[in-house]
Structure formats: structure tokens, C-alpha cells
Length: 193
Image (cartoon, rainbow, N blue to C red; front, side, top):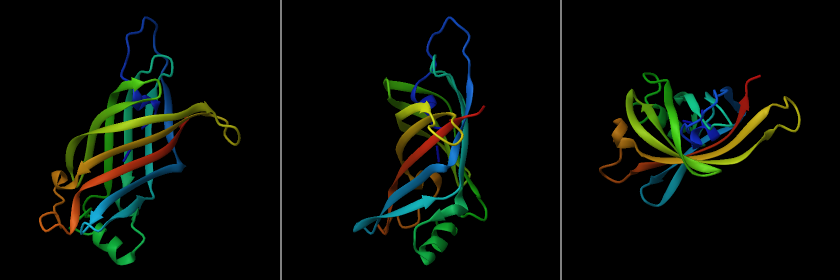
């Protein structure tokens, strides 16, 4: 979807000092966006988006968040079944030829604890924008132990949306495909040096 980091966790807090914002980017090799949706009420079908990019500004001291932007390539959807993938990419669902991107933007969040909170932003699918609240858990904030050795925020994020609210009503009325889509994001956001 979503970007999503401890940044998402907490809204700006009152601070006397000037905040020192840092830029974070989602690591494409360690970011997974996946969803499940009911199929005729029997079981949930899994889908994954393979192409995701995102970034945000965040101050780890003040917990100030700004400029959250996540972009998902809608054509990168994979449900592990070729025919179903073709249908999901067509007009009944994502209509990827007309709407190649799914986007999420946000500016602040609300803490629930030191390592969890929510962030509300705008999710755009099929050209329709709706407010969405993400549940965010900070798993770890530390220097990466090898490779780039940058500061990394590890996050687990989830939310649910009603796809009909984005104009995607195929199969809802007759119960063939569920309206609620449960979305999960696992990501490592790297500080830009």
C-alpha cells in the first residue's frame, strides 16, 4: 500500500527544540504487501504485490512524521494462479491498464504505546480516494548489522478496506468474492544517508 515506519506510529508531539527530520525509504528487498479476500465464503484467497516503493520523513526523538508516500504497482499483483491473476488485473477488479498505481499518503499518526499506534491517510485505488487507518507495530529500530549498516525501522502494518468503496463491486452482491480485503505490510525502512 504503506512510508510506513515508526513515523506512522505517532503524531507530532510538542517540542521546544527544532526537529531533525530524517528521510526513510522502504527497502524493496524487505517489503511485502499482501492481502486476503474471501472466495465464495469457503476460504480466503491470498494475493501479493511485488513492486512497492515508499518514503517518509521522521524524527526519532520527537516522533514527528511528514511526507508519507507509498506507491504500489497494481500490475505486480500475484495470486499464484494465472487465470485468476488475469481477472484481478482486468476491469472487474484492479483495471491495471487504466490505473497502474495504488497510492497511500499520510502526514501524522496517533500513538497507543511506545511501539504501536495508528496512522490515518488517503488510499487511492481505481482513481477513488478514501481515508484508511493503518495499525502499525514497530518491531525494531536499530543499525542494520551488515551490508549498508544504515538505521532501519522494522514495521508490521495491517488494515482492512471495503473494496466496493473504491468502485470494485464485482462478486459482492452474489457473495462470490468478499467485499472486505485484509491488507498486511511487512517492511524495513532504511534511513537515507
